[in-house]
Image (cartoon, rainbow, N blue to C red):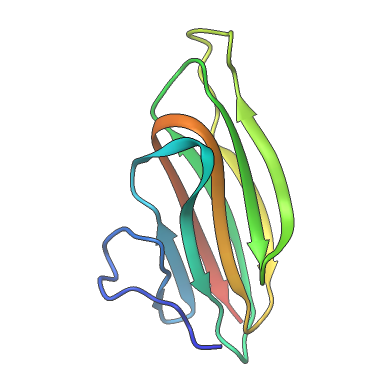
Length: 128
């Protein structure tokens, strides 16, 4: 598997960027589409290396959010969770952080199901 990267290393998109031994990906702010899966990030890890990193799930809404996220490695779910505060208007949410080790030659996909606007998924890591 090749590395699925991006052509603009300072921009947003579904891919990953590498600078030396560091890597990052930022989905950009956009809305999830209700009951259909929305892909926020999708990239591959280098074949002969692994990545130690963290996903951060960030939002720009303070009420009535119920979002189900899946982190998949090679189409296998490694983490599934819900971020939500529906019915608790005005309480706000803290960004959720998930720490991972991504093996070499792994396809990574982060999807969301639910309705919200202005949601961002970021990833930062170190390549070993």
